[in-house]
Image (cartoon, rainbow, N blue to C red):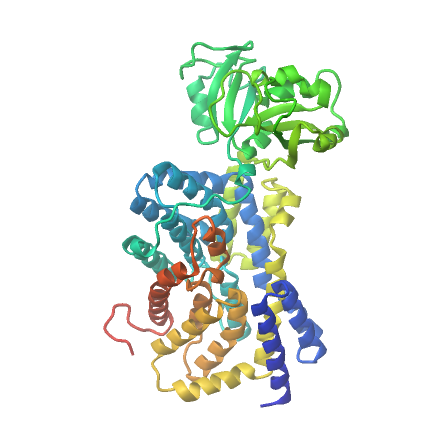
Length: 606
């Protein structure tokens, strides 16, 4: 063994130790490994920094922005709500609908984002239909992870594998090259969770701490403005247009509750609708033509008196909890006169129990009520110390440019099509799509930057040099020769299973990207020694890194559902071991069929 190989293995061992110990963040560990490879002379500066300009790093950053555009315009939320409606009220039907739909979403987005989006939807379904949340959340998280095997760009491991294949001088894979395997795995996973539901414990969902402050429905008032497109439309048409976004609770005209609340009643200018809405909807009302927050229109903005100035840019929404024994308890919003006394306007209210009717200003406040306040920053800051409020917090709503949803869908479809047809290189196609999302204002530039997970980007840029160093020092060839000496008589199918299994075990302590970078060069060298097509060996390695469900720590999505589903470590082992074995055999069998001319139907395992 040469000195550079020993030096590389020492750096690799220290890097793995730091990854496993989690004493430092994974992105920092990747950068330290990059610096060590450079300072020891194993890699030159250009080789060490090549990961940051690589296709995988660019595609991952671009996909984060594309996903942000779909989320910001309400597309993912609308799809998630549609999935919830189709799921019905039975456990088996919910699983049968949610798993394929979630997998399809994850194929074109980030699986953690999809898991986070579906989590509250399934918790609500479980609560309303009296189903065990634990029976729904694990299948959903599994489907989100399996969905990443449907396209080449949905998981960093596949991008890194393709990059390695190209650097070996072989033709790169197209973005749907692994789709046959991924589709089979989604079918397998769905069937497994339907037939093996008894493996998942029945436990009621646990309400996450702080859920009191993550409320999904506030009461607020909408004003139908003059010349609004809603003037003359019926309440039924309004309810249909805002289905699942707003729930109309009451209808007022000239300050009086209308006796005729029928769906065929026609709206008029000046009408006020008391609605229940999510924080995002409240923040997005300004984008709806002809509608305004009633309290803001009444007390805040006065466009006829003077033009808006830059000072209006300081206006914001916050939420405040009415404190126990507060001076506000037992008094109505109008009686307190928030605008005159505190310089803010009440635009929304949340109450733990009961339904509200009538004008918001006439609501008598109770202890624990949560108010949504609108005002300028200089007026909101003193409220934090006001003894009438228990606490003051930022309002969680984000403005959603829903009218740009068709544009966001078109951009995403165009980026995928351009990459799939090779009209543009994949990283250029997705980068162009990300830029288009920002230029068309489907997502603002600040949010686009916020949505890019810098840790993943830096980690990919930092671990790619490890793979380069493994090849350059001959370590990959050395390990492959050792494997070859002991496995030369083994069938290709068994070797593919070995590569999958090794990656499946290693990914429990490392990320899928790090696992792929370490093992894919070995797979490439092993295939070369056997004079076989290296693609299936590399793909099986990446699949093992992505589609192994042995523990909850192997995938970030599993960590999201761990507490809400009240799962234990043993739950994942009991469900995951048989499933991972099935996934391993399916992956190896199909990879052999796709790239090694093996049989599609069982009949030979050689």
